[in-house]
Image (cartoon, rainbow, N blue to C red):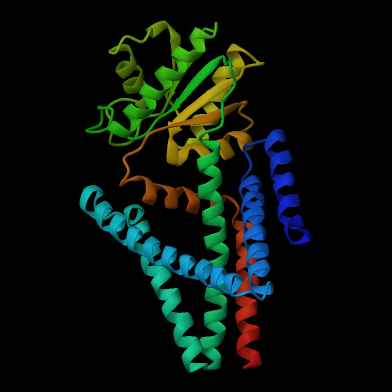
Length: 334
């Protein structure tokens, strides 16, 4: 059982960090390390047992991982084509397709390096494989923890409900993506009101260059047209990014109640990164997500992950350079 001690310790650290602050990317990393340690211990246990059943189990686990990789590539490729057909050919909509092609490219490179064994190919293959494993680990940890975070309960009471804006259709109309946020915010507000509170709902979003009015105004109008009390809405109409959404909304909340607590509403794929930004900007509140169209979720999740990588760019660049150095050493040793 000592084999599983590192996994158990990492899981305890994860739980302790969750209790202290759930809005940390490090929580996702500790969860991923706990699962990875448990899998490695299980694999070692199977192989070292010396039994036929153990060897078959280890082979089956490796085969399952290979099949999972193949399925992932196929799903990403299909999703990439869906995004092109439904959302257009902008760079942001190509992430699923690029992910599928990237995985295929790395596998082909590693296989070619293993067959030919030329120094340059071995070095490049080692660096590419290391970087791919590192990014894959972070991505799977991100997805798993984001899924968990989206199912955690928020506080029973809150003074504000903040809805983050997004672009408008035709410069003035609320699109389905934003409508889902507003409807979720309305349901959260209703639930908080039933618990004895009277929270204020803040619609947050400024006016883009191709919009006829600020997003927050269109959002407020959408809610009032569906029966939401206009006197319980405040409009934050200066922000153009998620960070500005939170900073400017924070100023409104602190002015109204310095000891405020809030619930922030966005789409489910965006909830965890919004929580990370909320912590960084000092906003006292948790984030809930509204549903998103199934075809849109994979590409949007990859986009959110890339944005998190950029937020921690110094650490990721340092780790990336280590893998490049490993490739150089592999080339030199050949």
